[in-house]
Length: 141
Figure 1 (cartoon, rainbow, N blue to C red):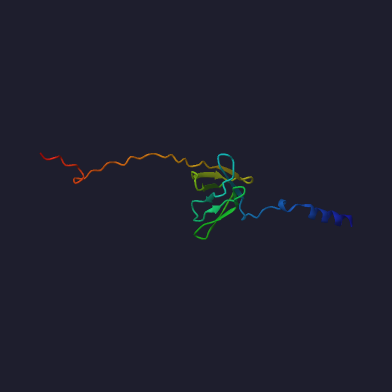
Figure 2 (figure 1 turned 90 degrees about the horizontal axis):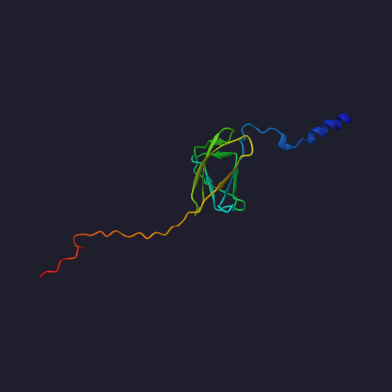
């Protein structure tokens, strides 16, 4: 009877996270988008160059996480260790950032800092384009 409790205790004491992941699940990658003051940017979007969809980040913490992307041709791009991932991060009012990241087996958290677009107001002088009819005539004597 005690061996039955030992077997049952072993079965139920193993956490579910300890079970090996299926090979086709993909490795989770998390992107956290922040501004220069380390505040989350709620309006940021993440996009892979091969897909058409833009993925909005979580508006509270500025994060986006996935282990697979669905491409327009219907195929799935599953993240695997050693794979190089290209991502484009953008937000209104911020400079878009494109980067590459090599996926590891675990702890794939990428912090991206976006910089505000500086709106320098420049006075652009309009060039004076003269046409034959616009040239002042010399007074006749």
